[in-house]
Length: 273
Ligand SMILES: C[S@@+](CC[C@H](N)C(=O)[O-])C[C@H]1O[C@@H](n2cnc3c(N)ncnc32)[C@H](O)[C@@H]1O
Figure 1 (spheres, rainbow, N blue to C red):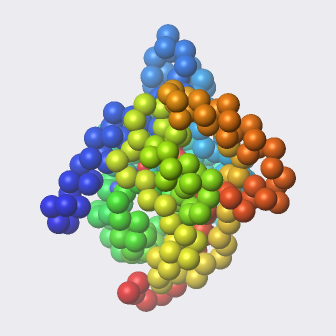
Figure 2 (spheres, protein in one colour; figure 1 turned 90 degrees about the horizontal axis):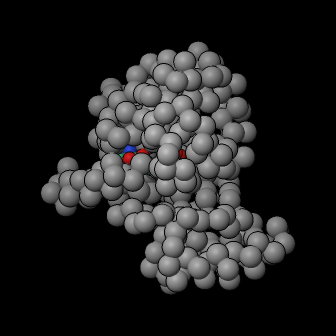
C-alpha cells in the first residue's frame, strides 16, 4: 500500500473510530453506549430495520447459507451479522476500527450468539487466504474505503469459486443524494461531521468493478428521504423543504432517483484482471 493510500486508510479509520455508525441515534444520553438498552434503543435506526429490504435479503441469503461461512466486511456494531447468526449461518465479522469490533463483540454477547471470529480487518488488504468464504456481505462500506475496486478484488480473492458477494449501499449517481451532496458539499446523513471518503458511482462504473463475477442481481434501493439528525441551514432546508416535497413524488419517479444500489454477484473461477 502506497503512502497516499495509507494516509486515506488512517483518516477513514480515525473518523469511524470516533463516529461508530449508530452512536448518533442514541438520543437518550442516560443510556450507556454498549449496554443492552443502547442496542435496543438504536435498533430501529440500524440496518436492517431501517431499510426493510435488508432484512428480506438477509433472510433470503441465510436460507441458502445455513451452516456455511459468511464474512462481513465493515460490520460496525454487528446488526447484520447478528441476523445471519440467528439464522444459523457461520459468521466472521470484521471492521477497520477497534471501536466497532468492541461494540460488535458486546452486541453478540448480549444476544447470546457466537460468531466464528470478530476482528479488525482492512478490506483493502484482508489477512484471509484465497478461497476462504462461501459468502461476503458488505453493507454501506466499500464506497467509504477510498478504493472500491481494490476492495472488490479482495472480496473476490477470499471467496470460494461459486461464492456469493452481496455488496450494498453504494452511493449511486445520479440520485437525489448525489445532487444534494454535490451542491450542498455535505453528506447530510451523518450527524456532526462527514466521513473523509464517500464515493458516488454510476451503475455502469460499479458493475465494471465486478470482474471475475457473474452478476445475479443489481437493484436500486432507498428512494424515500429519511429524517436526519444533522443541524444547520442546509439540514433545515432538507428537513423542511426538500424532504416533504420529494416524498410526495410518485414511486415510479422517486425510484429512478434512488441512491442505494445493491449488487449480488457470484465468483466465477479464474483471475479478476
Ligand atoms: C457506514 S458504516 C456501516 C456499518 C455497518 N455495515 C452497518 O450497516 O451498520 C461503515 C463501516 O465501514 C468500516 N470501514 C471503512 N473502511 C473500511 C475498510 N477499509 N475496511 C473495513 N471496514 C471499513 C467503518 O469502520 C464503519 O464501521
